[in-house]
Image 1 (cartoon, rainbow, N blue to C red):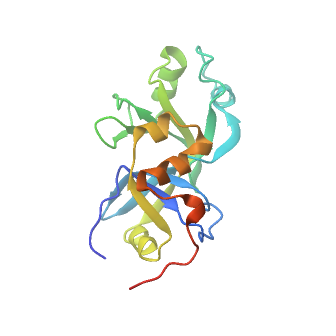
Image 2 (tube, rainbow, N blue to C red):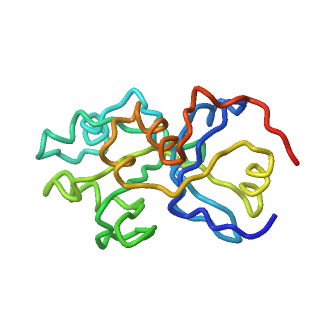
Length: 186
């Protein structure tokens, strides 16, 4: 398979996806290169709010506006660790700038800024992430496990989680309910 870079793209799980971690998911790819890929599932909330997460990490949350936001299951890797998708990128201790507007931060300082200053305002907090070894994502694409589409911040930060998968499908002009489980190869 030719080289493809899916950084700043959505992966849309095909209906035949059997892996329970990824069935019916929308994954935002934060990094994809020759070493592999890293992404965050953005439509699978946990039974935890940001308010309760902030209590657990003992950071007082000044703005109640964030307290009811869900924390997401970001993927099966490092599920004890938090990852924050956010815009703007900002300058945090451990941030991967995905593009000029969106970053992924794994350091505590971003949570402290959210708690104290309410910024960055556009955030999606997950526990864990999805990871692929070198060539693994390309192999899954060749097996028709995923559809891909360039990501839109609107889908990430402005859509309710239950609408994100359909929103990403609309970017492709595809109705998810019309997809079939089997794919053909020419």
